[in-house]
Length: 318
Image 1 (cartoon, one colour):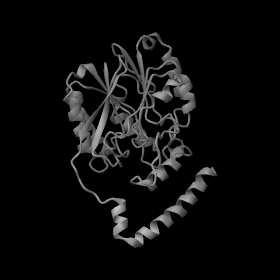
Image 2 (cartoon, rainbow, N blue to C red):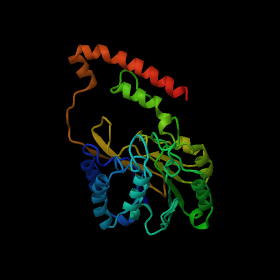
Image 3 (spheres, rainbow, N blue to C red):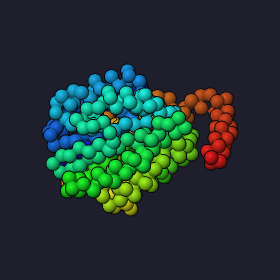
């Protein structure tokens, strides 16, 4: 079985529908739908509105009609937006994409789908994040009930005799960067902001999850942070051979000339990344804007410094 892994397509933002269609066309060119399983790690849409759901459903349904098996778990954007979760949006998303999330099973997590050689298990990392005090920002929270159910599920004979694949949205590894952007890199201040606010996008019970998965899972797939890195070295500390971050497969808010997805061979563990080139489009860089406007160039560093200092004080005093 080959697993096609992609994530964070953010339909409803910019030209993401066109980019997702390009990815799906490339996936279709692989042929052999029966030999592949497509797993999307959430943030299918950029917000929990009906219009975005209808757009993404219109893109996914033709693939399903052609025999491709697609599995989906909810992301924080699917259940609200970048700043908060909405229980009503979360319920609407689960209903609208029920066939991709649950198949013909009861509408509850964890979701187990058995194939001949794999046991994919889907989790909802927004499940315990829907209370009034918990729903703000972009954190994830599985909750003790879901982890307890997962613990039981991992011990069942049908699961233990197959390759176990666990997929969820939120990133389980807190220090997710391998290389931090520096002053010579484009978008330095946005990278700096992202680094210092990463605790607002963390999985709150990541430690409990990893202790549950320890030595019982073969492949761990997630998204959310848009890094797109291979975290197998981190996963192997918990006895998990392969751990992959799906990034944003449509390159949302990323400066790149291509979009990508992974194909994972569940038998050999080999991973292949496939690229789809984007049309070249020149956009003015931050450096060129500053060069053309000296006043902005003088003002922005001062504003960023004081704003960042105030925000850092707020974050680290929490």
